Length: 114
Length: 154
Image (cartoon, rainbow over all chains, first blue to last red; front, side, top):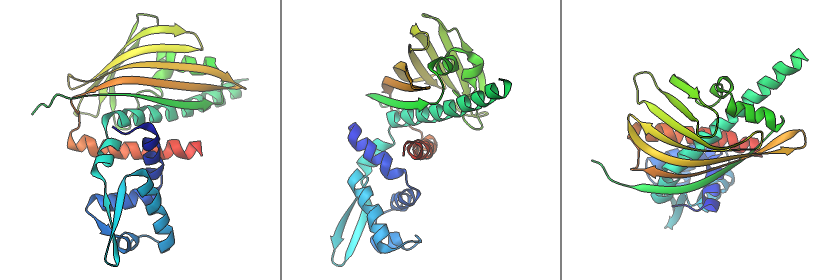
């Protein structure tokens, strides 16, 4: 089971659409850094920076073989991030988002009446 | 097919809302208000939602995608301090299978003209309820909501 500091890193890592794209690509199998960078509209240093955040979270790992750096998903960490209680937390995060929207709407209506 | 498994976890969510605690409390205590935010998953139909909001009282929520898996929440309220605290426990069933039992504490604190909300859920999650389709959808939901939540925090 992931401890919470690591889970927070995973959440942060996945909060970015580019990094989510990279994780999705890696979900189909290991890839080299240049393969990962190819579909992305950004510089190689920017791609490496995203990769660093993903590696720090433990979600992916990379290894240099010859002149190519290969990146792969860490299935254990990914599995934990998708685990039941993480989903449950996500359900409540979403509920509290909606609660916030509801309260804001209610406030607007109340103001109009005042 | 059935693999017995139980996972335990505690998670905490903290939020701040720019309205006083009484307003946030009402959004939990009043069925019509709670229905506006609690169970509305896009495309889901709510079959039943009743709240008996008092200590020992029960809440039932049933619903799910049309013709899809039916979800059921059964809640018992254990402690209610108006505008300050609610403690409840709930079980979740998917198609009659128990998938989790949780103990939940909600605390509200005035914070300037707003409210600081703290939510703690302690739960046992049963038998890896994890169908492949649900898993993919669950993950996408997870990513979406995390994205939103984190964007708000920063």
